[in-house]
Image (cartoon, rainbow, N blue to C red; front, side):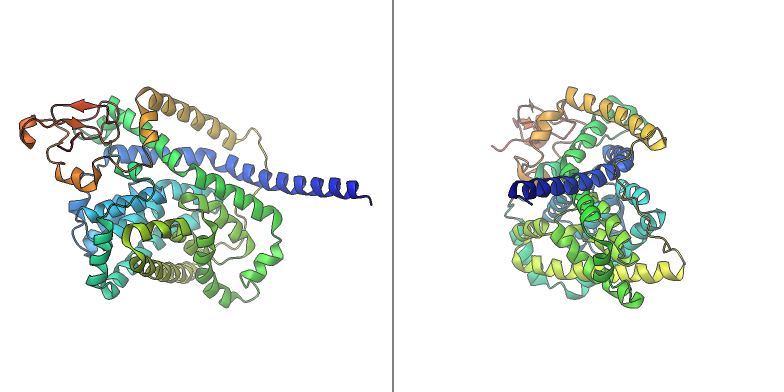
Length: 447
């Protein structure tokens, strides 16, 4: 065979392999598209009516009550892992208990609506149930570990580092609070301000997480197309059922760490791993591990220092592994582990079925929300998502009282203060109030 023929054969083989991987990625994308839109829309509605303002005072300690509240508030927050990490530090700096802030962080990525919907579609309802049962178990294990092993000196060092305010990622997104207060929940949702807030949260959550979703789908497609089933079965010890149940939760977080994919972007990968032979508990541990991927570990280093980063990695990993084992045993005893490994990892296929009709309907909803976002100052906020708020966490905290949503007078905060929006500096007012573009509280400018 000539050199030219060899090159043509090689190019053709590579092209075919890439096309097959992209076909798998598109197939999964088409299957879950409507669910992603639905999940983000529901999350946006929740964020529009649940204020971040009172979170800090609700998390004063690491009592079971505070941890439970942190889980509830986190579940009502964004699914973006980077924003969750940034918001947890903000809460810690403002006075929230560290354990409660970490519980909030985990709930923000592991107990959110869109994650459950996506897991149901790709993996099955048993995995969604495992996530919402195993998530609180993991957070409880972590809270106990913190109480038993977290030393005051290490905590103070972490607080000193956090107070330096070194930027991580999605700082602006984490600081945005456009929630609507007053009246019933229904009236807040259908109000003009409520509709605007929903559209802004919807678009900005997509902007925060789309890269992880795309990367996750592409990696999942490549693994499904290129990695033979025999490799997965050997890697996950399929021939040794007992060892596989122990090994799965042990190795899954480490696979997640090196995948670089976080938030709900790791669900397609979990589907590929399940079909490949990983244990049921291993899938749960893999999903839990989005908060210890390498980029986020680097953010912990900036936020809390090297010592606390190593401590968080160790305690997070142990909590994820133990929670995975508990899920494996509990669901095994209850007979809830699926017998078939039929997660939806398929090549591209579009036909006139319920999935297509749902995708069309939810894409129409997306168009409506994006149009509202564009007409109400959204692009300006989008540009500031990855920037630290101009006034900083502590400044915002000090003046939260003055910048009440109900308004007031300049004299309330000491005379001739000029108020501005943290996300729209061009919006200025002589009195407290809300930004007309995004609904966030106006805060006093530095003198």
